[in-house]
Image 1 (cartoon, helix red, strand yellow):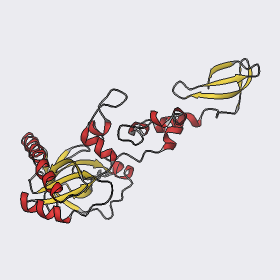
Image 2: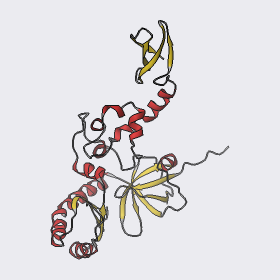
Image 3: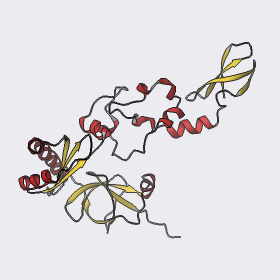
Image 4: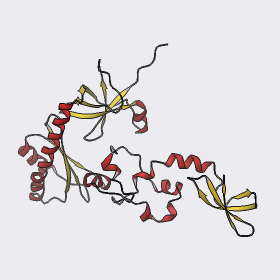
Length: 266
């Protein structure tokens, strides 16, 4: 039986948009960095698998089709670093134009496409901003295709960087690619963190910490097999009521009829 070929897609580094493509005779694998060309410019993308596409809740039915040029080489990496330096140098010039138009925009970072044709500026603002006049002036100044992208609090933390309460560099700065599933208060509750107070689960961005998502499946699977809090539980020393769950060690704390506490394995 002929083995079915794996299906891959491209996720653009600049805006995380997912594209369809034809790899031709080029052998590629998931997580490879490549250069592709769309209707406006050449950009860098990460190869993702069909499984990752499904995890992102995205269908491949209406994906735009782009041309894959090549896998990223050493020379390409050097060019990419030059583009990053050039984009950063353009930030003060963009800031001057924003201030000239008195717009409530806070610039965070900039991105220049691999071929240098498209320049993207990322910013935050308290509400939607009409920046059409700024775009026109920026296009005239830089002689490039200009894109202004308003982002949220998580992106602000990613652009600024910093150290989290765990002592490590922000996950969003270090390795997250902007495709993390939405983090909710229910995730904190499922990990018995809801009762610890919101300040314990809020990150520097003012949003729920991204790491609440990482071990969620483990907590939910383990918790489903444990006796719920408030239920009766029989131990070697008699029956009692479950008062607490230690999900990591797979143990529960039981209050016996004589009001003593006992921690037992599930």
